[in-house]
Length: 143
Image 1 (tube, helix red, strand yellow):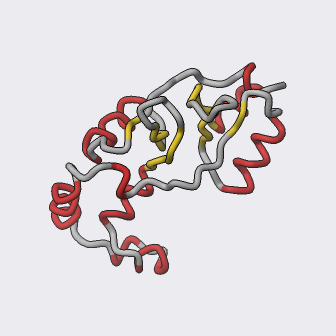
Image 2: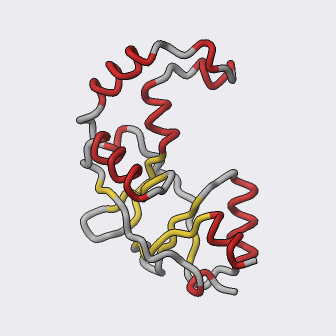
């Protein structure tokens, strides 16, 4: 089966200058774990995820420690979020994005997601325009 047969044509996306607070709202409302970042022409230029935003709030050493016991208080996290809420997502997005194409097979996409530990992939056309997303659950529901 090809990606075109099960792609979610949900075009929830943000532009580079979208404030972090707006991205959080869109993530919450869409149920997605990450949002494609597009330019004025709708071409994919990056991706911003919940993890990227959390990393902006929490010091890098927490990732190394793999423990929530070293997290700052929720008050400190809330203060930090208020500090960055108006920053553009471009400051925190990943610019190197793994993508799927409409003619990719479901097996290829499943392999990409498993090897890279991804919950979803943006789907782009031949020119790099965002056309939708594929989530892990989309693959599972096809089984």
